[in-house]
Amino acid sequence: MPPSRLASNETGFWAAAQNDPIVRAIVDAISAGRLRAGTKLGEEELGALFGLGRTRVRQALRALSFAGLVRLEPNRGAFVTSPSFEEAEAVYAARRLIESETVREATRHCTANDIRRLRTHCQAQEAARADQPRYIRLLAEFHLLIAEIGGNVVLSELLAQLLPRTALMQALYQPAGEGGGACPTDHHMEIVGLMAQGDEVGAASSMTTHLTRNLRALAITEEPSPPSDLTSALLL
Amino acid sequence: MPPSRLASNETGFWAAAQNDPIVRAIVDAISAGRLRAGTKLGEEELGALFGLGRTRVRQALRALSFAGLVRLEPNRGAFVTSPSFEEAEAVYAARRLIESETVREATRHCTANDIRRLRTHCQAQEAARADQPRYIRLLAEFHLLIAEIGGNVVLSELLAQLLPRTALMQALYQPAGEGGGACPTDHHMEIVGLMAQGDEVGAASSMTTHLTRNLRALAITEEPSPPSDLTSALLL
DNA sequence: GATCAAAATATTGTAGACAATTTTTGCAGA
DNA sequence: TCTGCAAAAATTGTCTACAATATTTTGATC
Image 1: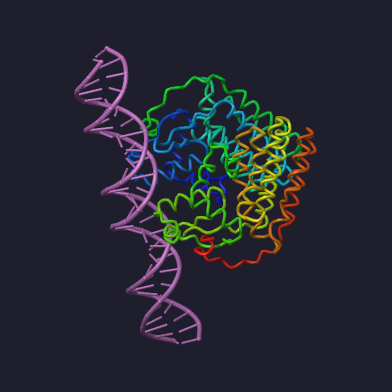
Image 2: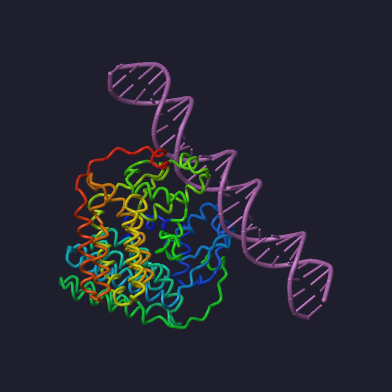
């Protein structure tokens, strides 16, 4: 069982879209900070890179735009979103709202096996520290996994949409120090610990502070970083 | 200023998609109960109906699948979603979570002009009672409008995705009595009244009971209603 | 050299063609 | 009549060609 599929329930469109190789590659490149905000995503160029026609590229770009990672300008093309700091705050506010609920529900429903899965997942996070795209994917998946244990599929889907956006913002606004400090596995372990004790209030509040810390870690600098070169950003 | 555009901020993919004639027509037909769950949405047939090629049809179907109104089965086509009752409960739970927050924020931020807009909107709802698709659209827009006043764009977007789904479920599971009883303008007026008094707790709780009543109004009958004829459903 | 218009180039938007897959149809055999 | 299988028809998936729209380059004028 590949860990990157651990938290993907097969329902929902965004989950399916992430299996698209183009979507996947762009999400990874954005998360890792290789694709910077404002970069133009040319259809022909992407198609050539993946050996696919423009049809598939277009589908991928639309999916990414749905998730808020890409901005489609009519007759001009697709660009990596440049979220404002207000937008970042809004996304984190939404996550706090949704995730304090999911973690509360999860704490109520979770079985011993769920706790085990969460702990295993934290270990996988530690192990993947070297491989940044994978590490970031895992950190996000942890939150998704909690949402799934919570049991409300709709909230899971909404959260799944929000997660890549926060990844984009971290890559954008995170100061030089690599993302390691922002969403560390320690916090995750703490949350799991509280869940294991059945302390739903504590777990929810721990989640909230975890997210607030994440937001605070973002630098307010809104300097327009130069767009990156698409081809080199995607070729690893 | 056309009232149907009152509450549509131009950002966000779903807002844009709803300007697509195909999306619009299908959403209306679903909301009005003319297009029943399980109906197959053939690409060629839709294209012929709107005088458009399959490319546009496909885009529309994909957008509808983003919003959870349509299920795409690989190599089989697009079908109007048949949400289970659990799914309905999940969507309403998500709406309660999100909207109790948006109405709280809106109550804090709202100006006298905002209150006026909301009251005007309620009147427009009353006036549109005869025209069912429009009526349903307006009822949903009211909730969106509150979210926009609340000021968190992300929550607005998420809510915008959820609203058509609840419309689908109402059309699906609502007992014979037409949708009038489910989301009446009276409740909306009450909420606006509480907002005008600055009673955020009251407004939030009123919103919650409003939504809970909506959910309760759905019949638990899960009999598979026969799919409708696509052409006749869309030709008004 | 700067400014603006117009041609040239490049890119996106849409439609239709062909390939792959599923569904239906037709027919033989039990 | 029903079942199983194969051919035919219909439908979706993908690519490519052409049209519409932006962007860049060119060149003439001041």
